[in-house]
Amino acid sequence: MPGPVAKRVYIKTYGCQMNVYDSARMADVLAPLGYAPCDAPEDADMAVVNTCHIREKAAEKVYSELGRLARIKAERRREGATYMIAVAGCVAQAEGEEMRRRAPFVDIVCGPQAYHRLPELVARARREGGAVDTEFPAESKFDFLPEASAPQGVAAFLSVQEGCDKFCTFCVVPYTRGAEVSRPVAAVMDEALKLVGQGTREITLLGQNVNAYHGLGPDGKSWGLGRLIRALAGIDGLWRIRYTTSHPLDMDGELIEAHRDVPALMPFLHLPVQSGSDAVLRRMNRRHDTAGYLRTIERLRRARPDLALSSDFIVGFPGETDSDFEATLKLIADIGFAQAFSFKYSPRPGTQAAEMADQVPEDVKDARLHQLQALLRRQQDAFNLACEGRVVEVLFDRPGRRRGQSMGRSPWLQPVHVNDDVRLGELRPVRIVKSLANSLAGVAA
Ligand code: SAH
Ligand code: SF4
Ligand code: F3S
Image (cartoon, rainbow, N blue to C red):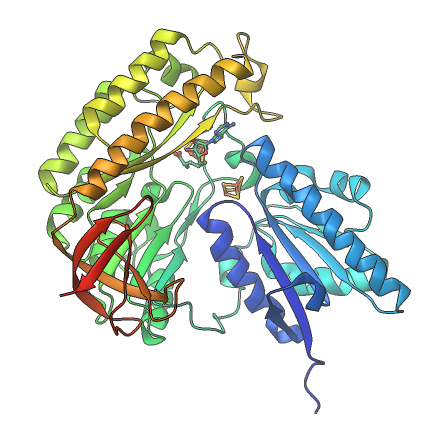
């Protein structure tokens, strides 16, 4: 029997690491239909845009990308050929049918929990001229997604948890990803074993709220993330484990102890605090105060003294005063972050904070962001500078930008490049010779 006709799919990914993971899974789902991935939309027969709804800017980018794809589609039409455009991810979920009204050339709109239904949607779009699926199906997509077809690389992502029940007042994720669910331990272990068998040496466990993980264990009990990490650390050939993104409230004793006891668990943690003002945290519905956050950090540092920290910050949340903002700067100064992401508050449709009084003017947000980022930059530079002269373990996971260069990551997630002859997948001690703006230069020791 002849196989499926060779076709190509271009997948463009916006947003968080979960979207990166999902895009790889969508490629797996489309492979049996005869679609092989390609790097340019012009070379493709189908384009998938995996979108992010988190801030207005992120969502806007999608429409300019779609405009570009619409032009390719029109050109194909003139040649008598077809070009299928699918929108996936959080904008797809948030806008649903509305998206096809705004961009009628879009063939498929598919929410993040419906990717396993893509083949069906492709068939329906061909038959009926369009298909939309933004349900939160009763079945888990993970039970229906095919096995990864291509090796995921030396450092790979593995989604263990999805969705969020926290409802921070600024955030769309509970609406776009749905309720919090965890994959069973056995499914995670199987996928991890497969990845390691294909050469993966570092796994980053993913979830919108990954430390809220509570998957069904092989003993019939619910396992937390700490326990899952201990089990994963037993896999031969898996050298490094990371997880992201965590909520301070779910940083339980078991997980903190894993940082103390599991050498494969890397000493770097992204633990978003958003603000250093208790009043703002309350209005954000973060359900912890700054003292609680500081206590958690203290416990973590006691468990793993070389732990480096990262966070997310929002400036200009409704009602944020100068002294609220000062409190955020103080918290940053007190903790010292190795790295962090910071954003101007962006009102999102359907969220509580968008309706709050005292929205902060744009110019105030700009000034605060500028000041906050300058402080974070100084802290990041100091952290990187302190690595000069030290020998750190680097896991090489990709070729460098220049010929003969290899790139890897330090335990603290810093990108490190060397000009030595190293193989991808090698873990090597590297002497750091120079701290650059966003990476470290080293020499294999
Ligand atoms: N689950 C994670 C964060 C997911 S979203 C957590 O609880 O921390 C990633 C980051 O985007 C958030 O940490 C927040 O800093 C930022 N963010 C989310 N909604 C935002 C909004 N409306 N405006 C600006 N930044 C936002
Ligand atoms: Fe959004 Fe808050 Fe859930 Fe994080 S914890 S995904 S910020 S609602
Ligand atoms: Fe964006 Fe959705 Fe991730 S809104 S940050 S792609 S969960």
